[in-house]
Image (cartoon, rainbow, N blue to C red; front, side, top):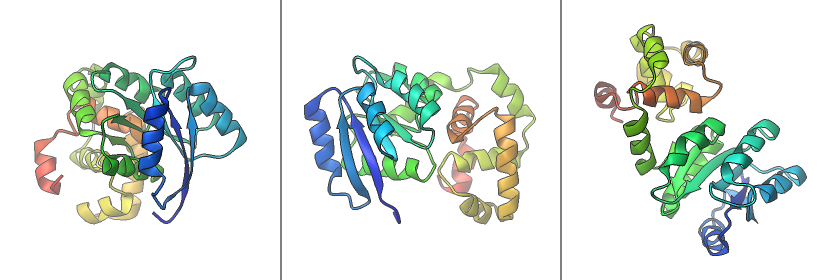
Length: 225
């Protein structure tokens, strides 16, 4: 990365926080790491200093990760949030995404995946660990009639662009892969936001998951993803 970032680790277990701090402190793209034991401490940090990313545990007291995420999205919209949970707590996924989390990791994720997730959300993309992505597909795919109706009005080009956006491709990369102009991709992005009723890439991702676009075998084969 060409920029350095400041990060907050929010978890009510000091041993876990210290372990995660030890994993990340040697990353040259991270200039500062602060530790918080619950959502109220995260908010205090953000009120006094600019941070780029929060690694947010979900189950904390007195303010949990869901509550903190909602406040941060309203007061500090530029801050990226990656939710952290234990295996088996996937019921919180949809709630955290709805509140504005840009990513979701299980606490047993390895160092490389944690670093990849942080870099991804800083670039404006989303990141979900493989287990979480599989859970989302299993639980949400095909559940929304509204999104299904919207999909029917979408041409194959927009469907492909959604697929590539959700696989973290930039407009420049998508333009090259689809052999169309960068400006066309930007125009299509705006149209996609309207058609999917989305305010961010997270909304587009939810739409793609619910309508099977992320799991489209033909698109995966076409683009090698």
